[in-house]
Amino acid sequence: MNNDSKNEHRRQRDCHEKTRPLQAVYLASLALLFCLIVSTPYLIKGNVLLKERIVVGEEIVESALIAVLLIIGYAVSIMYKKELNKCLREIDELTTGKSNLEEKLNEAFGYIGEVNVQVQEIRAVFSALRKYPENKNDFKNILAFFGKRVLGIVNVGWVTFRIIDPDNFRTLREHWETRGSAVALNHGISNKAIVNNAAIHGCSVVGSRYENLRIKVFCILPIEKLAVHQRILVEAIVNDLEMLFVIFTSEHYRESYLKKRQA
Image: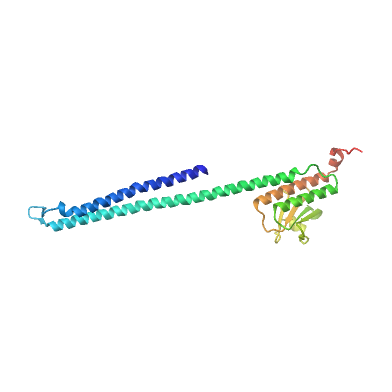
């Protein structure tokens, strides 16, 4: 971006410098033509003999010479205007290109800012978890924690997590988190519509992406469309929540890998 901007400035400066000698040549040509026109009566004295029997009067020769000089002056003016317009168009193009580069640079800085926010949000979400859920209360706290993180990412009144068995559309677990005194209005949304990715008026649904599990975790938000970075963050939370639910419901995990509490 910086190199492109420098090149644009250099080309614009070169174009301005190019018009300066062109203006100088044009003014010098006009001055020369003016001097020739003024001095025409002094340059031509007497009649001009073209052939033995053809004599052209002094006035006619002067008029013809002045006409030729005027034509030359007009031609020089046309050429000057043509070159000047060409340079002006190039300057306009360079100015437009400069504006486009500045817009792209601003967009790039904005995108970098969004990426930094995403990184900070992801770090805030996952660095706070210090242990896997050992009981229903632990998993409920994790649902509440993730719900608050989603409300921090998306400015909505409520959010709902729904864990569904896609084979029979049965709800295995549901949790909703609200902002302030807002009321969650998700009770009329069917599991079948959620699993089949049906359009739900006024809501966005983000589901876990893994296909080889007998469960699916969904996040329901009362917003028509999520921004790209918002959807990425919410999907990361949903996928992590799915993994934690699988671990939480695993008997082998409970019996073999949990550290035994000392009495």
